[in-house]
Length: 127
Image (cartoon, rainbow, N blue to C red; front, side):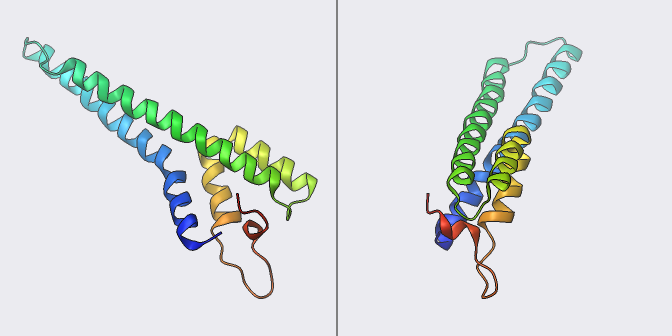
């Protein structure tokens, strides 16, 4: 896999985490705005807009997280460098640890550059 593909894959791997952080920030801003408007006894101006931002971040986190999990499961299943036990372990890690598992899989199996002593397991699969 080329360096540019690894870079883009790394960016897409971290996107669900960034979207979750954005969701949490907008979640707290949303409820702080509601509590402030209740304290001032005024109507919140942008209640629906803030609520839309919440759902946008959540939707993007779910879609990108699911897409990356499917990609990494397929990558692990087709990786010829893995034994059957390694393949099963990585697939279970990717399923049960979802976002964290994808980040770990990226740094352990895709990102490392090949050295002369060992081969990079991601070079055996160009998916």
